[in-house]
Structures are given as structure tokens and as C-alpha cells.
Image (tube, rainbow, N blue to C red; front, side, top):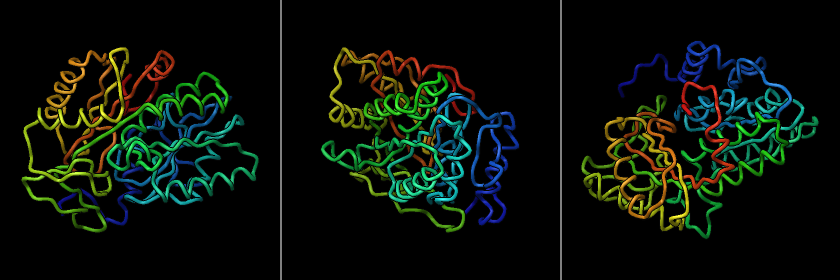
Length: 331
């Protein structure tokens, strides 16, 4: 294992401390819990937006705290759910009296702990609603899409939920708009090499140097197909076809695209991928309104990438493109 770290057991605490010290105008520690990150300047008179999940995926989850995005985030250990107490703290710190919307990925531990935290803060008078992002088409069929994992698509939901909340919309309105975004997102990725967890010191999975796995999860969950490495264009054609077969878009639809590195895949390769995605959608006369290329949801140093498609309308576009303040998101 080669990592620029100190003690593996301090990895999470030191990384989030560095995040806060590097961007003190954006992030702050919650006064009651050092595993909860809040905005440096607390908002008022708006619905709070909260997320949380395991470390090892920056910028997800913690990096998306900021104006027009999240109000607070509960930080779990590497690839582990935050605790009920941490989540409850995040909700309390995000609450401005208008209720709190929780946006999280569809992982068993996260869902269970958020449910219990919502019950605790509910008994204290804080009203919550929850949107569970489930955009990974490799993890379940369209008929069972509520079982799908939540991956890079959750960032679009963070942004849209955060932006409508800034307008003073009610908890119900914020929930409905975030749910609309969630229902119109599909993601599919491919892994080329594993990552190494600091405390484990060994790869999360094994794969041969000449192999890739389509649909592998960001924690090393099994994908849908392991095959020999192909050239970029036929691989991206395959991924686009799988997404479009699931999504059923037509030439009247507009989409936003996210080309996301899982950690080690460089920008040059992402732009080769983006070029081919644009060519696929152009052939079908589906308009790509905006393309996001970079590291948005990672898995430590895993090599690989994901393609996320958001079907967008004028309402979602307004909130997606609204101004925000975050080191990891450019409008």
C-alpha cells in the first residue's frame, strides 16, 4: 500500500480537518460532533438539506456542503455508514425551523440509520422527508429500480434540492422537486482497478490487468459483466446503449451529462469518453444541454469512470444551473 497518510486510524479525521482548514469560508465542524460538517455561515428561513455516508468518496458526500447545495453532512468511516447520532446531529444543525430534506444513496446501513435518526429528531419537533437516490442501472432491473444503488447521480439531486431550498420553498415542494430529479437520472460505470482502504491495506477486489468490470459498485460490489479491456469508443457505445435502453429517451428530450472519474482515471481519458457520449446522443438527436467532466463521486484511487444522464426540463434546469458556493461544483 502506497498512500500519503499518517496513521490509517486517523485517516477520516485528518482528511475532513484538512477540508475545513482549506476552505474555512465554506465548511465548519458542527459544535456538537466532529464527524458532522456544516456550512461556515448557517442559513435561515429555509428548508435544510442533509446528506451523509461513508468516507472515501470525496467530493461525495462532505464536499457538497455549501450555499445552494447541502447544509450539513454526517461523515462515516471509510466505506461505512455514519452513526445514528452523527446523522441526528447533522439534521439538528441543518434545521432552520422549516424542516429538513435528507438526500442519501440507496445503501442498507445509510437508509436504516437515517430512518432511526429521523425518528429521534421527529420526537424533538423537527420535520423531515427523505429522498433515496437509486440511479445505478447495473444494480437492479428497471422493474426493481427502487433496489438500485445510489452513485454519482445523487450530486444532481443535491444541487437541485439545495437550489430550490434557497428560494424559500416548503419542505413538500423541495421534496417533490428533488424526487422529480431522482426519477430522471440513470448512471452506469466501469471499473479498471481496485482501491485500497487505509486500515485494510489491501485491494477491495481483484481484477486482471487486461480486464474491466461493467457496473461494479463504488465499494467493489459485483457488476454485471467482466470482460477484456476494449478501446474507448466501443466501450462507451456499449454503456450508452445500456443507459438508453433503460431510459427510453427521444429526440424531444434534453439531458445533462456527467462524466465522472472514480479516482484515478485522468481528465484526458474523461474527455475522450465525453466526445463519444456526445456522438452517441447526436446520432439520436437528443440535446445535451450541459456536460460535467471531472471527479464528482470517487472510490479512493480506483481507476474507472461512470456516465450519468439527467433528463431535464425547464424547472429542473432552473435549479441545476442556479448559483452555488462549493469548491467542487461549477455552475
